[in-house]
Image (cartoon, rainbow, N blue to C red; front, side, top):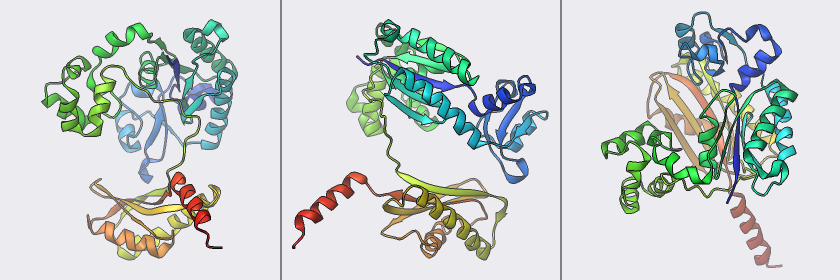
Length: 354
């Protein structure tokens, strides 16, 4: 049986800012872009959350909810440095680590003999060591699988520690609202509610065939999660699937020439980012457009080089779907399947007529 930790820093970007400037600790702060530039809140501290401010909220709305909010620009280089320090601490416990972002990761501690093999003691050490070395608090969940460990880490935030032992899984999951299940967003939750399913106990009463009929492949996942089943391993290597860049305009763009002109610097930034990633093989190009009414569309096409003309063609087709002023524009590439690429190389070597 696996033993998994999910470690999650509490309001990470804000925590770094408060650590480096203690005068920020007791006032509401948020990290994000300026409202006049249509900025968005990346994270905020707990004093700000008491006013209803949360991540992904527009900075303008955050300031309306909390006029005294201190809005700080992000310093990603500093956040990456602190993140590297935290990940190095995780490495002292196990090398089976799956980072999910700068501020959270899964750790597989199955078979670790330190701390007498106790997941609780390992989590306590992890929390204490991280605070001692970096000044950042983390919340940790301990459970037999990734799904439950992530749920547990959020159970007693901030600075929390929650353990779900194997013999507690059935009762814990049974009472869980279906909205807590990963992959169940508002639309899926509403569909489940119309079926009379509010919690996992009710979900368990439905046969797997019925769930697959209603939700396709995700129906099987719902069947397993409602029983606390999650066989996913902690992956120490995550293969990148896409590279993209985007920008939100200070003012909506409605002029056709301006729209095309805005693409050029984005394509240049994308080329620089691809170079930093070692010029990977490209499967498809895509453009993302968000209109002034907040509707979005994405259009992609294969077999094209990441050149400006190709992105302009894709963009023109995507814009036709809304034909409205644009507030956000993005360009990117889907990377070619590495495994497929290796198979093709092998085939070419075997087929070499020389």
